[in-house]
Length: 392
Image (tube, rainbow, N blue to C red):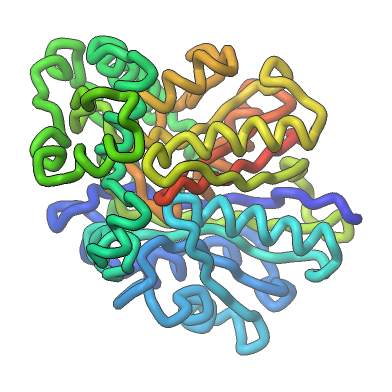
């Protein structure tokens, strides 16, 4: 089994996931092509790449028809470079990284591949693929597939978190993200697109008072049958306290990210070793806890404890799940999303996990830490985690 390394990492800025966002005029394929061309400019020999795997959650319309192959052809990488897409909902990008690393490690791929993710939530809206999990009433009833925001409020209720705790986390992640942006921590990886050279959703002006003034985001949705669906599966909750607001929920974003992965046979200088990955699943109504389970599994695989990890990049699929991970694994603010997370920076579904693996590497390089873990929870109770070790 060969060791597999992160050799390079690039990403677009994250734009607002609306028609007012700076990246709304750029198609998902164009986002990926921009990054592929940037990698060539940074010295990647495209003809040596053995596969390109892209995670995308809504694989329809502009994100359909194997976007990875389309982008690779448009980028001029040649007819001989394959491409494929992966859908594990919000964990699609991190799963593309995990699966590609595993193929390199096993020898299924030789020595060089590219993996990442893309999502344009402004051009291909959530649920636009009309899948039965969300849009077929019989399937929804049979599985109990509630909206993610309802799942977040259910988790907050069951865990006993207060609105003030959630708001405090929302302020913390905005403060971290504003500091990271001001310090230019992403300068090495960021590829400006359509005139945008920063994460558009970060709100440095956020205060405790502004967060406290926000109304619950999912209370009305709960009255439309979603609360009843959740409580049918978890009657122990009694009722659902609707506590999450737009300030403690991940903001929709457009963006893309790519990582160059290679074995020790690669001629490029490694930045980090991919130690292990893990997948997990849980009750599709609770849904959002699977990312934490994946973290626990990948650490167990590597024989590590949470205390051994210097950086946890955990997708902020609502504040309650971050508070839960912090409490259960003893992860303080200095180690959990030190540059802010998706509540502040935005959640471009398929791209988020790939960005987080890259951010792990960058943060370990910045601080001199050894181990970092990235993890994402996805719809229907899915989770994926990747553990990396800094080289040098």
